[in-house]
Amino acid sequence: MLSILVGGISGLYMAQFSFGGTISHLGFALLAVLWIFTGYKAYSSIIRKMIVAHYHWMVINFALTFAAVTLRIGLGIGFGSGIPFETFYPYLAWLCWVPNLLIALVIIRKDAAIIG
Image 1: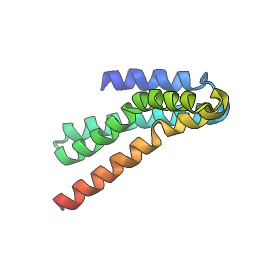
Image 2: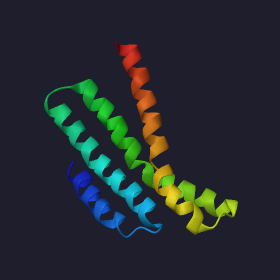
Image 3: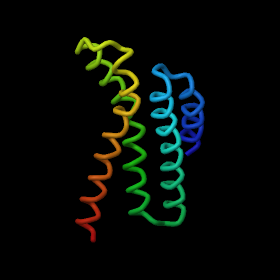
């Protein structure tokens, strides 16, 4: 939890300096806020012995954490496609984590259907 808090606060601070203007700033800032929030929710769930809720919050938190990997993949695709960096990067600030989050929510929904 401490690592997520430190990383999230750092990410929130660094978001204001991201390349790509307001679109990038908001994308990375929201990622940082959600990362801290989901880490807190996972931690508070396990403290209260809510194992399934903890698992679901951790799936979401992992998906947000994986944004760092998705960003690098997106950079490779962006550069490889020949699209100018200035054009694709502001969108990548969102595309590096929103699809991950949506996939996590699908996983959780399927898990809830199986359990419940």
